[in-house]
Length: 310
Image (cartoon, rainbow, N blue to C red; front, side, top):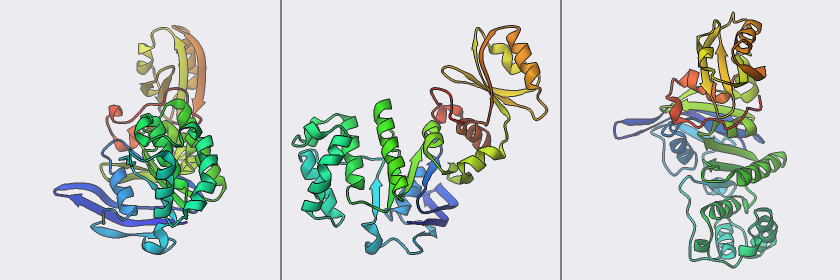
């Protein structure tokens, strides 16, 4: 399914939540709307789902406004999770499937493979309230895709999941993409967008900062970054000639370089004062691209925990 967002805006009282936003999500891609909390991501997704109407602009799926004929082709997982806690897992899945036009028998045929995939098969007859938060989130993800939608829209899908379950959901999303599904998700965790997305749209304070294919977005910024892993105090690195700025992560430092920076000289200067375990010239991470483009406080978005996949 092909999604087009055409110049949409939304204001609540005097706050502009989304400001003249346009983007296009081609069929069969994973597309990320990324930005800090409060950037307008959830408002955008709620407008796509016709939960909130835009004040202006237009949203089209396969060239049509979203109506009853298209609604059952969409799978939507909102940021505010909601399940009927007194129902069993099987009851919830059947109920949610029927809301999307599936028969109870059709849902039962799909139920066990999905429960097994999500490591929930032993809880099939348990009530939702007996599950942990992470297990409930996996259940809601199943109910989002149980009706085999053409487009899957996920708002902060990774929030609250541990690393193993993040990898599990990521693998499922990649499989769904290979099946031709269109996947749109929002996140403020840049590392997940960097691992998953074909294309991204960065927004800040309701405005689009940059969008396009991920590879093209990163290429626009050139290979102007170095990731360095050292032993010792690296506070001096920020003052080296050719270094515009640094961002410290858990186990490495990312340097933003000036256009005329001499990387050999920088490596020599660093190696003279501390032990260098790794020195890689890389494309900038999404985290640093966003910080640079949106001029946001770095505390508003989540740093990657390890090296990037650039």
